[in-house]
Image (cartoon, rainbow, N blue to C red; front, top):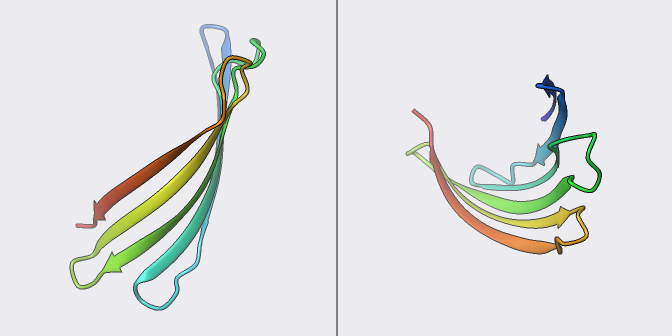
Length: 95
């Protein structure tokens, strides 16, 4: 799955993009990866952020619920920002 968004509001040009891939291992395990780009203002340099994500989902059957663990490597382009990691644990339910 992939999406691209471009916006021009009040003279500010913004871009956002992501690509997401997953593979189901049997009925329950779903490894995935994701790349995201966020550019809040193309006219200002060094404000872009890149996100590289890896994760594993576990499908809780029969509740149609997904338990997800994800690790993000966040790379801000600015000289003051340093790369860092985020660790996320999520629970998603389908109705």
